Length: 306
Image 1 (cartoon, rainbow, N blue to C red):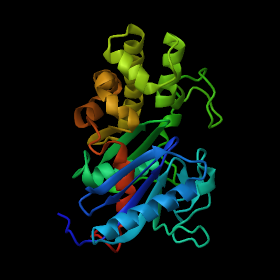
Image 2 (image 1 turned 120 degrees about the horizontal axis):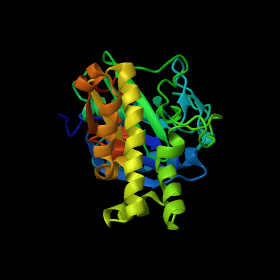
Image 3 (image 1 turned 60 degrees about the vertical axis):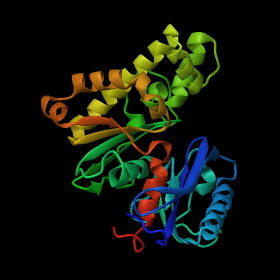
């Protein structure tokens, strides 16, 4: 349990289209305002402004902000904690913990999917398990794994790029340089694009969800297909890592009722007998703020018991 006088951690998640931020307590609870706003071109300045806002909010409640953690849709070097790439927020490239000159004191940096799974592992749907994988579906598709109670980062800090599992070698080109990646057919962006092509409606994933709930056949088929494609990817991840829990998160998880049954069916159809027996597929409990909580947890060393 957290104390009303215990220091807070400021957590930030700089995504492909939005920035989320909040003050986080030792138990993972979000304290005060939860910020979810469109990302500005000046992402670094936006994070700086939001941190000042959170520090002021904490001070008004008689509390302090001890540290700051940030996750980003990009790669973070495992050894240095430096942001090596951030395709949708290039201004953040080169930022590292404690680096002078940025005007922003950051204590920990992480890839957004790694942070989101860490948040769910510390505070949410994967709490208490030793082995978990996560697939996070939003603007893109991210993946992460915890094995034996430790985060799997890889030599360059970019292990388990689930969005770039190739599901159709002859499929559409991807920004990674390949073709037929999962992200091109089963992300929020892909869903919006396919909805517009199928119905003539707006390229908007929320509009697609509204149409599916209203019974539009084309929209319903899109979510069925989304679930099946994600299920195949989940099976691949489960077969590789044999997790106790698979966490499905990200913005699209807000409408998981439209595709979760199809995802589970496809996943269990393609898992081996052992992984299918052991893996529970669950929706994340922390929603869009899983990355915020995970970034805060990563920054907590020396403040919270780790």
